Length: 224
Image (cartoon, rainbow, N blue to C red; front, side, top):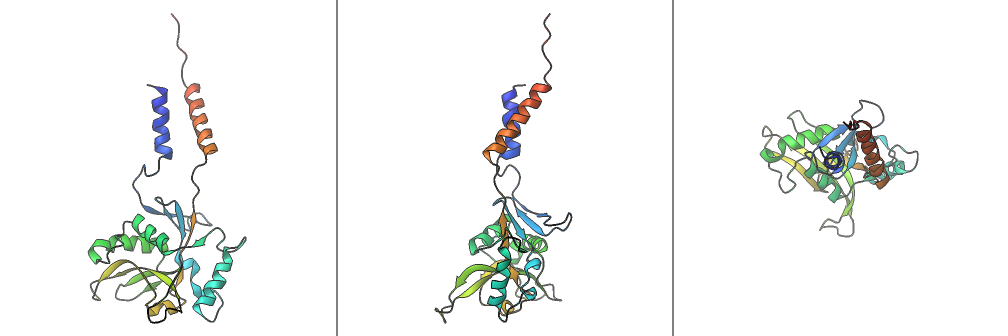
């Protein structure tokens, strides 16, 4: 079999983005098995469970003060070192990677994929009727029409409300108009960190190792 063909086939499996089905999956953060990260293999990002950044654990008289104290943990040695606060577009991209149709809140369309993502990110709000949500603040300010000079921090709601408590819906909605935003025990931060692309040096080393291995296990021809 042609060595060049084998080489490029192997590289294709190892390095070509999107070679496998796009999805989100669980990863560990600090300890093996903690499952506190959600990996988005489309955008190459690791999202921290929102339950790890609940605002109730930070000092502050207001939600914004709590957020400011929480974001101080982005610094070197802080609890959230290496992470950034997501924007609207980042959160929409995560939802789409998880298979959520961000153009609708139709229950039948989004229920399964939204529940899966909520399970990965952690439930921050739930009711006995089965309504569940992951609620996280974003790095975007929105000015409501009634108070254009008083911008509010936007919030992401990954939420499923079942038919037992109509009207039902499922999916992602970004809003500043929800009373639950004032409850620090139900709100965290949408935090992610980027996973670096393989460098040219890494690729070169991998190719070299592969070529050396192929050369090593190729038997010499025997002359008759």
